[in-house]
Image (cartoon, rainbow, N blue to C red; front, side, top):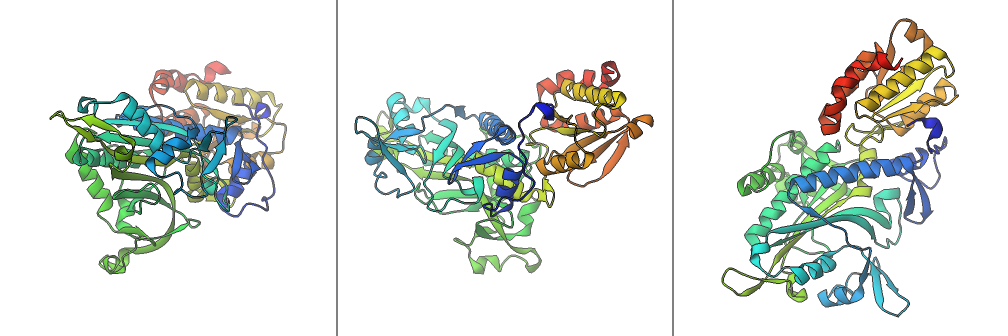
Length: 465
């Protein structure tokens, strides 16, 4: 993408209404614009990151054997009355009536709707286990929406629902979700700590929430520092292997980690003093097993192996996709702006032309741009007729992990400058080597398309000149 043709309304000053870093930087970087309290328009840069995260969530859900679908944002109040939650949920639920006077609601979650779908189409244990999920907009009417996308009224969320014949099978589905979520967060450059949690209005005897450590977190977190050394890495997981999934859960939940709501001082004091940590955390997901809480009142039953009708055991599993963007920024920024992890960056590298209109500099930038595209990477080329300082400030603000700076002086020596946004370190390299370096950096984050184009991209720079 050429910046001269892109819509990127960056702001020089900090917006007065923004109270936390992620809200301030998302507004300044032209990612979002408030439409009303707690509701935002997602501008091109923000929408691009949102889609990056959505793709990662989809890929890891499908890898774990879960089936995607899509449910509507509006739901019938009758289903919620049937489950007993319509009057219990509280004022966070937006209740409306259609033109015929039928009670409707803007869905804050989908347990009732998915259970109705299940009971309409599944009647035998032979169709189990089954996990259905979707990624959809939700609405909860927060009394004081603030902190940007971290606590908005409208939010983009993945919610998945498991259906199993027995509690044992349902707990395997629970463990499978925990493992898939750990993979998801790591791909986003986050270390999310799973913690025992309260079921809240959704309910359930088993529930873990996932928190990302950040100074602006809404929850106080007490934890064993050894938990931050754990990494899912590249290990292969057979999601049908009950023992393996249970083992990973045990590995990631055996170390002490609690929020202030469930903190146990006596247990915490058993952690060695040099590993005791107190910080703040941002919740970015939660998983629940709630047994037959919804299947019994809603009649979600199947015929078991003995021919008897039994209610299915269910679980609910959510990731706040839009909220994750705020969490990533809270954990990855400096005084100059955002610092995107490679796995979620909207563009893989920025190209800055220090002398727009100079024939050699323009040609070199075009060659870099086309070569990176040939590698399956997406560059953002700042081809505006602006001063260099303004171009650098924009690149720092929007946080692309890598920047290639091209100028007449460097080109005379046959080099361009490759700069890491995270470390600030720069290296002068021949253009072809700069391309090869970026290809190697992004190789773990790319798939078949990248592998197809990689050989050509490594060799192609001079063919564009």
